[in-house]
Amino acid sequence: MIRFGILGFGLHAVRRLMPGFADARQCTVTGLWRRDPQKAEEVLRRYPAFSLKIYETPDALCASPEIDAVFVASPDAMHREHVLMAVHHHKPVLCEKPMAMNAQQAEQMVEAAEKAGVLLGVAQNFRFEPSVNRMRETIAAGTLGRPLIAHSEFHYFMRHHARKWLNDPTLACGGPLGDVAVHCIDALRYILQDEVSSVFARALYDHESGAVEAAATLILEFKTGTIADVTVSTRAEYRTPLWITCEGGVIGAEDALTVDHEVDVETKPIGGDVKIERVANDKTYADQADAFAAAIEEGKPFSIPGREGLINQRILDAAYASIKTGQRIQIQP
Image 1 (cartoon, helix red, strand yellow):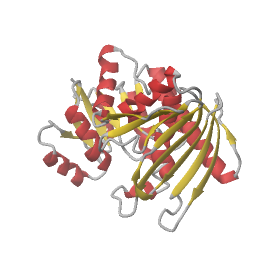
Image 2 (cartoon, rainbow, N blue to C red; image 1 turned 90 degrees about the horizontal axis):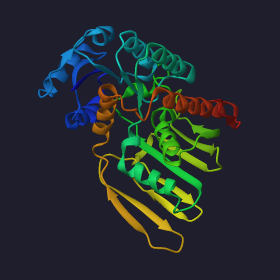
Image 3 (cartoon, helix red, strand yellow; image 1 turned 180 degrees about the vertical axis):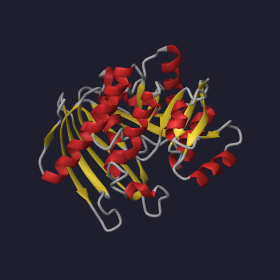
């Protein structure tokens, strides 16, 4: 069993990571660090089934011989520091998305891990969802023809949200662009097996979001010609529709990216009947953790290495540059 230590044990760890580790077969959690020591003590009482140890500092966790791998779930602005710390101690490190505050930071993280020979992965967990993989397989098979238009949304309601740091531009890469549009971007890249060549973006701000956006829309141009729109916000109920229109039909789901309930993936050839396949994404976080553990123990490739996170970060940078300038931004390789 690979023993993970979690840096930044907050709401995401409670809602998503720990249930995933509870279902994982090749790994577990044995250590944690949290910015608030008092809240860290509460974690021990909440998870009696785990043999958890609280570390006073991130460096102490990374240095511990009782920790085999580090999961960085701290606020975005701390990702670079914590990843570099894990790399310094030669610990494989799985970093939450967005990978960093900007592409320059992400590149430093990738280069440090590669130079040290340390495994660095990015937690774009939707690559492990059956719904996403069904779409990828169908697109790759070519039965619907060439993808023309893609549409992805990700909304959630931010008012009174416990992760207040998401509205702090000194801690967060951005608003819903940095937080969840990165999921849409990565899922589209993965499903289409294609790369984004340019981005045009617009954002809305309000008195509650402050310096970070409350909503945004992106137009992504892919290298093979597919055009995608991505719309995200923190002012609506949770929704994650994703649809791809091809020359010969359409495939998608109204809640394509959710892990909270079963998803109906619909495939509709032009002139044909709708085929509905119901899949469950509830093991996504467990599968992600096990895949990273397998990469450590068995040398299997991890499907979201650091360089994939760097690509996503460059697209985010381009989106924010487009919002600022009003121009379409080319993605620099």
